[in-house]
Length: 416
Image (tube, rainbow, N blue to C red; front, side):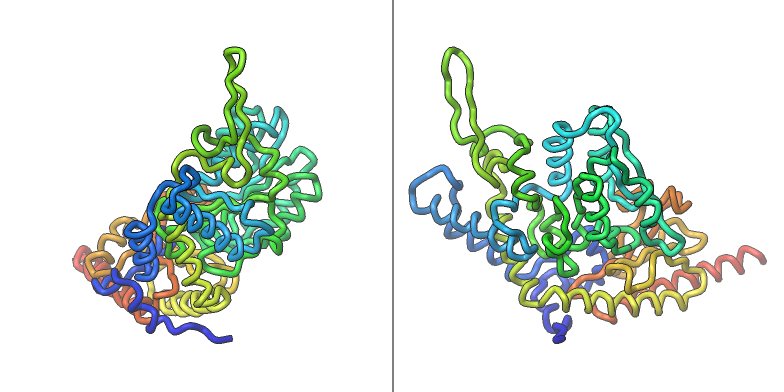
């Protein structure tokens, strides 16, 4: 398989010209010039509100926005673009399901199953909805190799289970979950399966029909697209049965006023769930980001990150005083969490920043996982994407080596 050349595409990313070694891709990705220009062109030549006018600009903007849904639908293997709902981010997508589906379908004694790896965005909505509905949240742990404990999951999923909400790739450990196995287990008891794809859709081939899930949530800003645009994919038959999440303009077909009362009826999918003026330019930018990734090839994106992750684990494992976490590279995405013994994660990140290296530190919006692993101060996280190269890993390793050497000298001086 042809793998793209990361050195060639780096020129597409203006921010990299600042000389920063950007290793915070699990938080957000940089934007290629093609996406930036697509958004600018839309604002300069085609911008108007959608679905609200018969004039040419409105029609052109509506066509571009609707076309973006089609591009995204093709990217994830959806059966129809009607199944693709644009939201602000993966967080809003999961909340939409929690409050629109959850409050209507969960009752006392029902159970929602999640894993301890989940981002707060796939924990707190279910915690909130469970409390309101009188349902129970069950949390499944990990095996010793940092992979999901599927045996514990099988015990947790029972006839009381109504939903299994699972990440496809952990944003902390990089652990890749066998989503199809999880979805089939959920369906075996009549439950639905929601997948947090924020760390998978940007980094590997994802096809909702192959995963056999019922919902998929992901964010545009993590996959070269603009911020403020995300996606909820859902099975059309499930979405049709759900009540709207937000109410207002465009999500309604008509509002009759008779006998002093309102009689609204809702718009068709996906507009039923896209109330008000949406992030039109964000949708256009997301579509361009998808086209960029399609040109690279998602299999190639995955292989590139796998190669970088292997190299990073090798280089970093050679540093005495560094603690690494997570499964083997074949079982993880392009995420490498670590700690430097004797330093808290934020100090390490600040020292790396002084050396021109951007990483994330803390709990990464997954504090329960860190508590579960006994990492009460969090971790430092390096994460890779299409424009990262081995020299970025070398820079990280050399900088950490310098920090460790400095620590050793300070320890020796302290003993004198």
